Length: 203
Length: 203
DNA sequence: ATGATTCCATACGCTGCAGTATGGCGGCGT
DNA sequence: ACGCCGCCATACTGCAGCGTATGGAATCAT
Image (cartoon, rainbow over all chains, first blue to last red; front, side, top):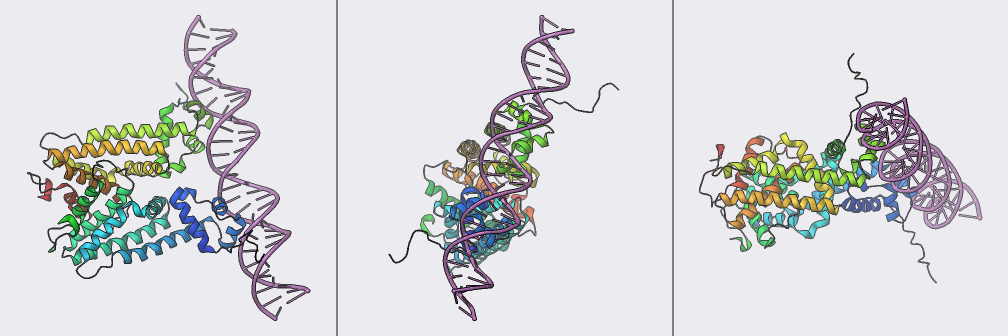
């Protein structure tokens, strides 16, 4: 018997609490972010929580900033295109956000945006993320030769669409969901001002 | 002194509670729908509530059905077009849903949709409303000469856009918000398959 | 070893809220 | 006038959750 694996005695830090909080946020929304629920999930008591955090609000702000940093990292990753591949990258962004694959991320996104409707600090962070996202996407359109105003319109449409789609029960018209989503992507991405053709089977 | 206006002694019925509940729903979301909070708002105690309702869930279902009925009435009102005026009606629908004017209705819409993510009965009702909305909007596109599949794509894009827009902080690119929204409406509504020109200043 | 520090458990008070039980007031019929 | 009934107030139990106080175990420094 070298070591007893009875009690794992893993030291928790702030980040462990934040990660668990994000998980609960995805499942239950902001109103589900409760100290004792989190503690039970982490197999500790709230005595631990109040060691790492001042109060509940302290955790909430940590969650918000964690989300913001993650989103910014993701934006630069998703919108960085090889020169000449900007249109493909636009389609990629639409696909990433509108697929069931990133369901968890979208649930968090929706929870944070719902949160932002009643919390000024959450709203400010969402506004920051929106701003970065929209500007990054607009750069892609601009690189495709789309004029500034149209690029603004199309990238606004892009993000409004993907967020809105995620809160619809959109299995309507489901005779061919893949075709539906591809056609919508074309409506968003393809401009008459573009010199190049659309990628994939959309040409 | 004919009548003493001291205590209004207004009889409350189920509908009064439902209306107050919808108001709270718009302001606080589903988690704010609490019996005692509603009672305080209506200047009564929860003794009244439990006379008109079996429990909290009873009220919730009443709110959901009230919302559903109201939405259905609104859909047939907003999508009923004079023959030949279908395109104008499409623009009207986009405008109604994306304007700040109907902010309250959109807040309720978002609250119900957030609700639907964790409540099966709410989800079923949202699905019903979505179905009716999408089919009604698709009829407008079909009447404009747009083929079926494209009509499905465009009306899905339409509703995803208006819902998504409402949960963005979209005062970005705000040099001319009116132009931005008009251009986006054109992207959604104007099809190459249409015989007629777009209304307003969009032609 | 021993004291200090870190991290967590336990126990407590308090508030908000769901639901129940029961009493009370006013209008109604007869 | 009297009793019934519709509508609401009051008072209670019970639970969940926030925050605090304090004790205790493990780890580290010296």
